[in-house]
Image (cartoon, rainbow, N blue to C red; front, side, top):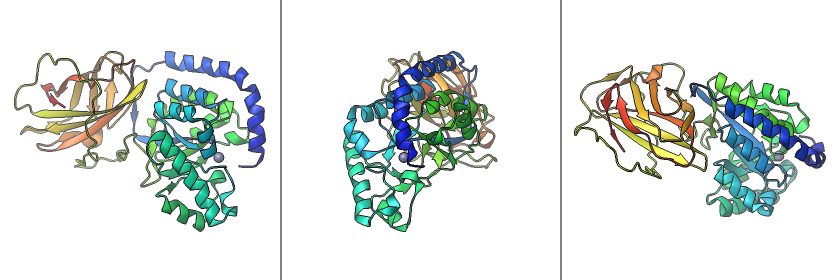
Length: 375
Ligand code: ZN
């Protein structure tokens, strides 16, 4: 990224107020065009936005991401975070993944090792104080790195993340060009965008629609692999069927915010299936990672899982199954590679949904018509 970027930022800030109204119009159109069937995630991509938080841009970016039901990875500049703590809180409240982009945005490879350490360490400290845990990802400014920098990153347990596709949004790319760049993303890949260009904000609704039309969803970046994965960190399913995939997720403790008041008809004792929901909610959205366990003696084949979503919840995307309709009584249909659940085996599926305050787990869960125990 050239040095002209910083000059551009000042210029762009001046016209941002005007552009804001156009961005708002774009959001309204997207929300109105709710698909009749939620997108299925056959893979995940990492949407990244660098150089925030900034008072003139970040709120608009977060509102646009939330209106389109996606989460993104934000590479914050440390001194911006220190100067704008409320914006970091807003990023956290919007359930974004907040990571380290150095303290002052220097050309890191021109620095001494001690200076590199200072850039990374100060940012880690401030972000840890602000978000409650230390970032795990570091993106060097301008994508410039070397062996010394990698050694410093390793001291802080940071995974270096560059990008697969540069949207060129820092270089004056048009909205159409940014959308086209995102259109080249394939599963696991990461795109570079920024917190400040109005064209980037304007591109987000089309980027999300384009991904959904290709059965790709916005995911998180795995600190282990540096690739885009499902929001809970689970690896997206392979495209080809594999006979037995019963690797459970690394067991997060089930924290279900608002348990349903009273289940009307409990499942029979010795139910043949048990479905566990693990919900992660933020102010307008949630993800639910569901584990479907076969606790009976027969095999479930070509299964459908039916359940009732809590009032106000609408599924925007899902993984490892197809979900339809997106609200009310939902039917999740198996994918090709997980069509069989043998006795004693389990499989994991999940979805992301918008909500209007009720973040409860689904109720009345049945597998091939058999009522399941829930937890
Ligand atoms: Zn940057």
